[in-house]
Image (cartoon, rainbow, N blue to C red; front, side):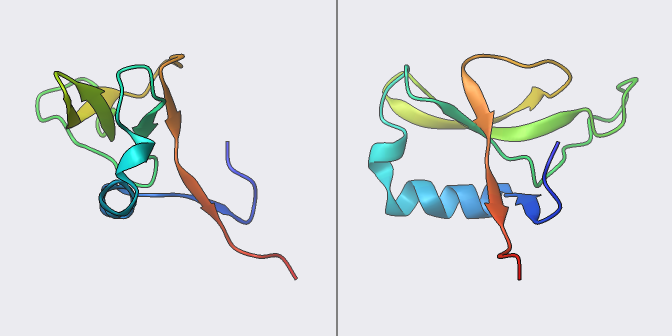
Length: 86
């Protein structure tokens, strides 16, 4: 649940962040990043847009994939931005 001035960041914004700040995601134990600003449709699935793009780390490299967003996990977090309130 986002605040009224908060929005989810998409895969493009997160990809740029990782390229400019590679130290952010260098180990398996680093918090993986759920791109809450984007959705991913899985044709044939019972749930339309039931997955979200995410960045993680494994096998010595950054991984990009999609993950089911229906349950919370302790290994990743949703990325969001804020619009200043007046």
